[in-house]
Length: 101
Image (tube, rainbow, N blue to C red; front, side):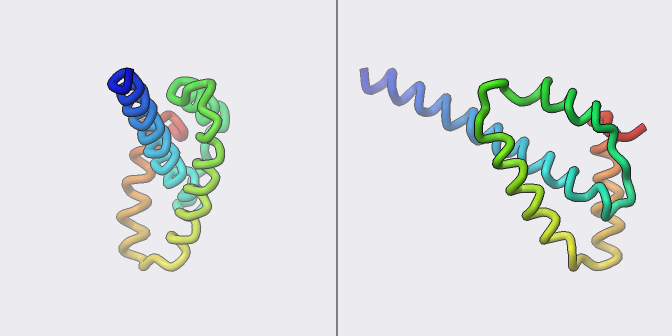
């Protein structure tokens, strides 16, 4: 019985980590919208969530807000060169996610 509980706990922890990683990555993209002078397709964001986030993941929205706010704070003081590099990759990711054309 303990092995079975450990297996479920490990699977749950892996799912939690996957959800938190996705919230962190999406938070970075969302936090960069204004900084990188982008305008995201809101329907595409909703479709992304629908496809990649489990319907019963209660923590995702909270983690996403926290990660987005943290990214916005970190991006306030970046150098011009860092902004150029950051925004170049964010544009690529946003396009890959279907947020921009």
